[in-house]
Image (cartoon, rainbow, N blue to C red; front, side, top):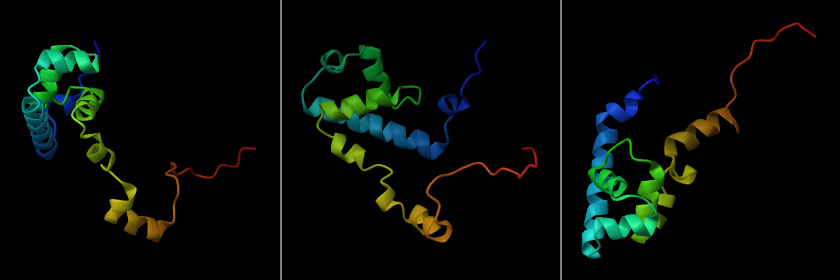
Length: 113
């Protein structure tokens, strides 16, 4: 039996809240365009259940469904700005102090040649 992903079963509250808000926003966008769930599902190439799950903000819904819905409603540009490294103030500050370009696991030196 496969291990269950607890993140999709019980996500942290801020994550759950953000997904529900996104789902509500996607539903509003669909209704404003007077489109049915079936029409949107056909347009993005998925089933109605995936659209319904996205509109409910279910964490188990694949990110590709959320992204395709944003694209369908002409809202994908905002999505592209998520996690923009230029807007990551904490990350930029940390980068200045460490100067790292890549994260690598720390290795102990060994004498095996």
